[in-house]
Amino acid sequence: MDRMERIVREGYKGTGPGPITPDGCAVELYERIPLGPEVDIIQAAVPAGATILELGCGVGRMTRPMTQRGFDVTAVDESPEMLERVADIGVRTVRSPIELLDLGERFDVVLLASFLVHAGDPGIQRGLLSTCLRHVADDGCVLMQRQPEGWHERIPIEAPIADGLVRVVSSVPVGPEVRQVHVEYHFPDAYWTQTYLARPMTTPVFEQVLAEAGLRVDEYLTPDGTWVRAVPENQRTG
Image (cartoon, rainbow, N blue to C red; front, side, top):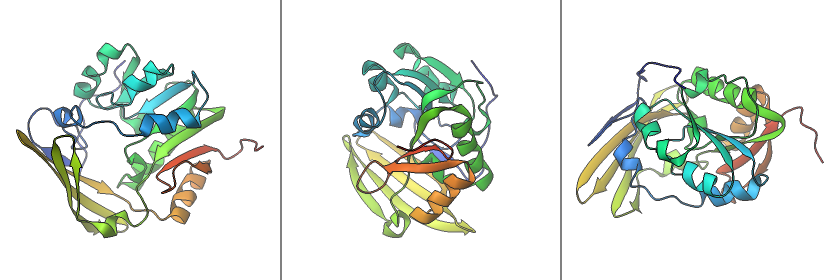
């Protein structure tokens, strides 16, 4: 299913070998990055065998293990090159910008990982959350990943990644509440960069943004608060 032609995202770019997505992600780079505890967090937070709408699936780093653990995944991405890497997993794929997606279906779980909730454009941010609310079942949940509070003030950051090194070099204010972040990925045989826009959010601001979208925090799933389970605001508690 294909809902778009190739688009350009202002303020986002990437360099390095292989295809680069509209938001600056290098496809071949993400094939190298190992998966962390994300799928364990997801599995602990939702019912076994749940239907999951994965928004921004990338090369399928989470798609594959979620499917192996018995979840019914629909994988969405705006990059055809990313979706090519998901083709062999055997899941349903949809090519679309997340903020424009409207499948006319509801899912047990809507997954918005990769800090996408911090989109630099407030209109796109609202669109992302509207897509989440539009597709989550009345008794379902939205799992999202957010940047740790104060993360932008700790830059520069350097950490090992696979057999290489990732450096978050800078986070520069470029507008009201918006920063442009520049990241470098160093490997023995390759070098990539990514530049993207992000809106830092304190916990109260994050919760207010969700409330304006018709969602509320049900639980912070990790001690640092980076993984969150949200539910429709009218969902019953208890």
